[in-house]
Image (tube, rainbow, N blue to C red; front, side):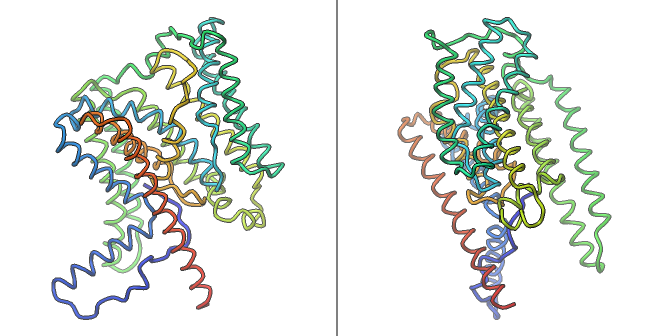
Length: 421
């Protein structure tokens, strides 16, 4: 998973290496270098390790946790939180925050319900209108933040309340609008045929391995160094290929790849390409890292913020679409409850910094799987709801603490580097 980080700093530089070493010392040195590499790359690796630990623990408590049927259900359950978290990541990369994403998901779901149920608008046109409304609401908030300089916390807090009121007004006294449309229901109620899933996986794996092979062939340097770089270039593509094949095998052992999860992966791939391979995406990291330096470099900071919040609103509307499809209706609780908090927690747990300038869109996937996995595992072990909330709260607190420690270490490393210069 690719990440943009601040200046590369070894968080454990203050600990001197051991000069004399038997097997125990070499083992300690190896562990130290591994921990240093993990910390210096952000919190993505600890998040992935946490996901593995969660899987092992809950499988030991319930034989059904890693069953194909449960993992398929878990993927669908994580989709809504992941899409909202993806919208949150877009603004977190700027060093901002959006507290209105849940309300925007709810109000756009209500708009969808009115258009389809009351207005009998074709489903594809209704989806386009709801996504456009989400983009407009996000851009409206972005204007107050970027052009008037009002803190995003204040603007989006007002938006959260205002959009909730708009949602209740649209729904009217009945409070719920049933959405009877097979095309909308299919978004979360269908799966790809197994053969189609394998064909799609083969195409993706081939593309990933070809890209990795090109990177390996382009590695330069001495013979030994060339081999090391070639192995590194091929390591991640091979790992991705193994994960894809394993996921398809698990899904096909149940009913097939869920359509909702496929939509999420598509959004993540597009988001990854935008943030890593386009100028506007790189500008997100630059503005989040140092807005003043970005402005002096000629980056249109105000426009980047406006577009980011518009995109965040569009993703919130996409989340509203998934929620309406899953529930078969739009109601007063759509987009409410703990959805926003889970999305923010998923973004941070997955490795995106609350302080801007560091993170990855894939944080949404990893973080949401951790949140959904914990909730699902506690349900399988018949744990009470209060226990579930407390465990999720502890996980979020630990993730934010790690993010803060990393930021302090990187800041201290930059100051030390400046002093030596």
